[in-house]
Image (cartoon, rainbow, N blue to C red):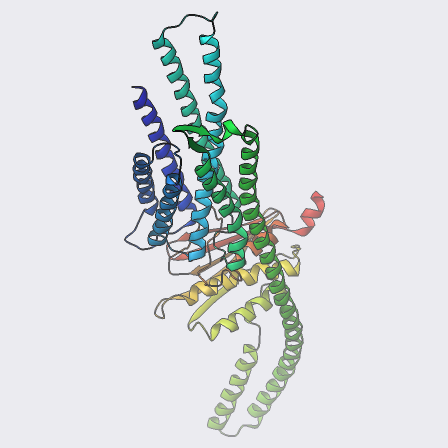
Length: 491
């Protein structure tokens, strides 16, 4: 019964470790092929079978190189499974497998200190019950007490090991926020060294922690008691270095992306400002020319009518002047929202997309800006440019025979201003675990996929936010803003 309880406790710990592995792979990796759905569950089952097989092969912590070969084989199988079942670069899969094994081994040896420290309990039992004036206890009771204590220590070790293992993995998942970021050679070296160091330290411990002298196993900590403090400190430092390195790398990704985003947006704003100035000059010239031409056409029309030169000739002149009038009317701006920045953005984006996306229709008749709305031109440009870029990109991915359209409108609810952009799309949205917004489909993810974050940052300046949803093959983007003058009142 005693051995059965020990086996059952260890088996429960292995099952939980397999679940941790499935959780880990599910957070970071995508199934490699369509036919390999639910790879995480396969990894769960494979881990359980592999650990049980290794436990039968090498029971406990042994002397010699058997624990080392056990660890090498386990790691190779883990890496092979990652390579066969999941997509991703070789460096990415290599790094994740090393990190997982590092957490596994470090958690194990930290929990193993419970056994090391608990050995003093058995020495206490021997001193207490075997002394001359000690209490009388039967051999059976003494054996039961020793086995019960051993079981409690082992159960506590498995519990601490599993809990610490899960906490390490969950902490790593939380720190690794930018899961779509590519990992280059320098990044792999920077991140992989702490994890590999932790694995190698644990490999060294597996080799030397138990030695056999004259047929009697000796524990390293018995010969060097100071190591009971030094080894856990070293393992904790390795664990901290793994988590700190990935946290630092993620912060650098966010910082570089924000710098790149700001540079792109500043360039867009400069282009928009130049475009707006040119449009103002052009519109002023067109309005003046239109006013003069209409007067001239009216006089010419009257002179032709009074003079007359045959009904056919007169009708020809009248048709010609009608064409001129319609031409002058076409010079009016296509978008009139009441906001100069919005008109410039809509005009620029529509004409940029007209050549790339044939038969695209853009309806902005419902986009009206209240007179009292005070939104900085920079933030308005950021929101409109990114919203239209995303909509145009979605329309551009549609087949030629599908209808391509964008509808932009706005409305006001009390002090809140809502801007809504609807567009047709193919119905496919790429979402990542733990991500608020859809992921980009472009290959260069370092320079793309930041539009939603830019809009969110601009909206938050006005106590607002960005939301999205899909309705069939219609993508709906909603931006909520509060006017700057309302913010000043609150402040």
